[in-house]
Length: 97
Image (cartoon, rainbow, N blue to C red; front, side, top):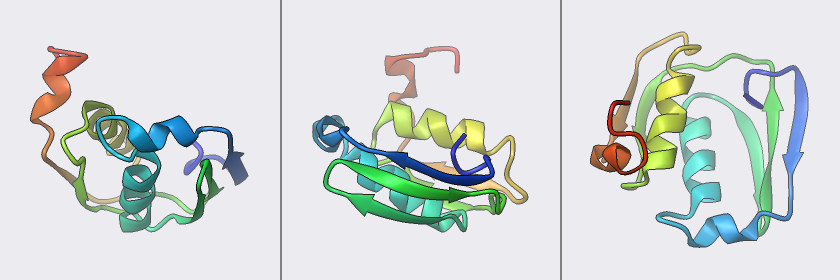
């Protein structure tokens, strides 16, 4: 959502996201950069510059079902196809997704 919103979004105080199924801050940053989003990461969060639109590309979900699902939803707004790799774990949290 932050990538699609006008302006800057800053998320801080989320350092626990670095030690989940994947480093979710880094995985989201990597994927958003692939889609053409300008951003900066911090130890505890991320700054996202929105309003430029989402492109397409190949995203590695790092086996994290939440990352895979986030980019599947992003694909609904993207101007080009998004291919998501390593997304078999989606059935963990949402079997019918």
